[in-house]
Image 1 (cartoon, rainbow, N blue to C red):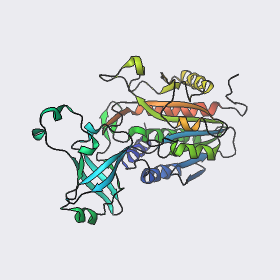
Image 2 (image 1 turned 45 degrees about the vertical axis):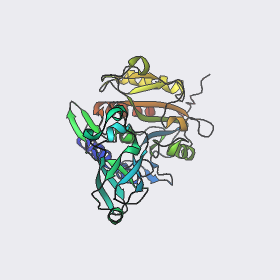
Image 3 (image 1 turned 30 degrees about the vertical axis):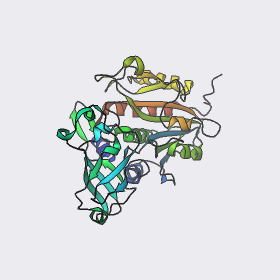
Image 4 (image 1 turned 90 degrees about the vertical axis):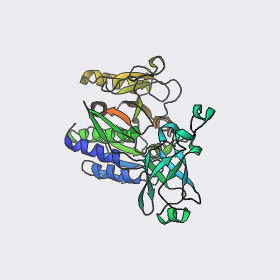
Length: 356
């Protein structure tokens, strides 16, 4: 990956933006998009759009959600401790002792997640999994008034503290890989397409609120607005090359093994086969995952938009998903961007992706 793209990726990953509060990373994304797209804008749902070759056909939507999981303050007690709930799905075990960045009206406030020390946890309590209600955030406030004086209010979001780390051999670690890397890949694909413009009109979209999008999140709104004939969704999936991962259930997907292509449910079979053909022609390694019911990605909202959208799903193998330290290979990100760009370049005006 070249230095410009890597710098963009790191800035995108480090900028805090949990679901419903994605404005800061979205600004980073749009600033990069301004360098290469014909039109860049943001909508009321928080989706950012970058359009290339407006007026071309067919219309293609490239979606990667830009939100990350986080926390939200639900109560400030008299002693100044903050109680919270999750934005998105957390394993509470990974939160104990973590530093957090609260995003307040007065700026960022650093705190730590507290729990009773192990020395004081007795009997059966040691065997029980900790729950979110057993944890709190300590910002060093002497009481409720002191916490409020820092600008903290109920409803303030927070993310875990921790910058991007490069481990070598092309591996990176960040709290926000799910799914800031999807938003990164679709814009990198647009960067490639801007150098050799396709026939299609292409809209890269950094979608909002996927992690809490039980009714479709921002993807539903952006798909309705764009009315694409075909869409590609870029998200993450479970890497199965670490201990305890069940390949019989999840398939075989390893870091550096290339993007993962989805079959079933929301995945249009003709789009899937076209993705396979492009990958094999371009020498892009890939694996396949089965999704017999739903994908738990933006694709579930997009493929049923309006009269239906032919949708493909491309995923990046990710270790330790929904943890403070998710891990991916930058080579997989590059290969995914090449695959997306190759697919779009192959599109013809007459392609309809209707299985007959």
